[in-house]
Image (cartoon, rainbow, N blue to C red; front, side):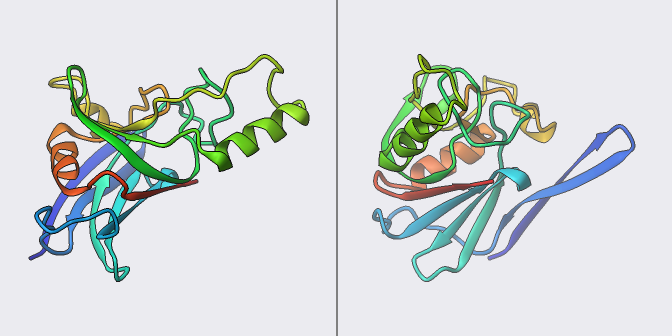
Length: 180
């Protein structure tokens, strides 16, 4: 089953068209931690779901924290971390509908953070931060996704109906790779 929903946005004189696309029906009933993989491509403002054979399943529009889409450097910079993570917890959220926490910081994140401190790229007293995840928006503010409004503290946000679908689909342990 293919489903295609287009959304369009005007930035000054630039027309941006993106879409929520589904290649085939996704079933959460048989999913385990290895059934699906998630790829977040920051430059495309997209979260893509693939099955265990590498077949593309769906693409969801997302936004982040800072307009600077670089890698997270330290707590408070509002950037979204890059690397390979896993969903470590899921819960309904009082503000953002659903929340799927990833294991940031992990060993790779800590290594990059410590190296950047040694190189003087970040303040010596900086902290790495945490509590990064995939979540929805404030109630009635799904338009932030359509308008590419980066508003989080470093998390990945999508429309509430999409985060509900992802929440029901992706079990704890699912691989999440965040790319530039």
